Length: 384
Picture 1 (spheres, rainbow, N blue to C red):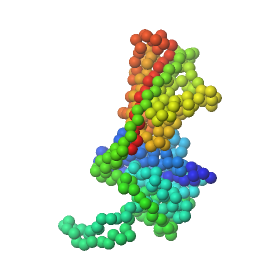
Picture 2 (picture 1 turned 90 degrees about the vertical axis):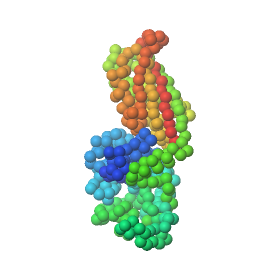
Picture 3 (picture 1 turned 60 degrees about the horizontal axis):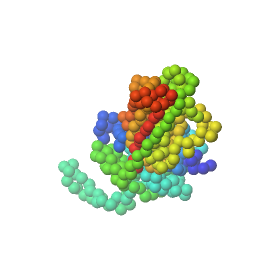
Picture 4 (picture 1 turned 90 degrees about the horizontal axis):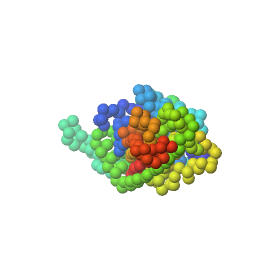
């Protein structure tokens, strides 16, 4: 069994924390154009040693489940009334999937690094549990009711706990089944069940977003050492026999259809090429050659999703997409909003970051003669 099938993650996102402001739970607030949850999930989905990811949502948020469940490596379950109940639901959702080790992570820690995840995984080779932490280096005071210092506490041996907290899967699953649900975190659950938990080095960047100021800190950390890449994509497809075209995943009735080896979605092809170009990864033909019969008639969302995964694996987040479709007909305007939303869903970004617009070539050239449709796209990728 390889690591991809035996190491899983549970991301706990069922809380209703509103202290961070913004009028909605902190996991759904935006952080550099993506939700906090999206940043956190990406950290585990793109890690080379983590396989299935269980996302635990509040019952009121389960309408979001289909979008996440569209990824074959993800499952979504409803959480419980307490954190422990939510973790238990996530663990039960992973049962029967061949999971040997599991990493349990708070959704409010979106800046967790691959090195922290690696250290937790490595410790599980010789320990039943492991968790990252940072030693307390500041003096500890005891405050009186009036806000004055009443005393001090010895900081020796004290640590600031972080997540992900990792465990042998069946051991922590059994511990949660027998626990009373009052534990503050999964280390407490494990220790109550007699499991040893090893401390590994944490990371100051792995902060937990709690209050409004934490968003500013997280933004600053994401901007530190920013690497921006720009990519352009261009594609054309000719018209052939048919009664509809597919543009950016949206079917539009028409007197003709676009021809091509796949579904000939010229818009998605241009965006795919733009992402690959920004990464210096060639073009769509290099990754999905038309000479390969497996791609005949394939949905272009497969190509676009793969390009986005390559970007995420390299540590890049998609900042925005600007796509222009060039044709006389069909009219794109009435469908542009749906196209933006479809692309945003595939790329896992906000629709407000995807622009789809159309123009004509004033009856000039092959598009002007209505022989086909052209598309050009520009994307920006950002790496923190």
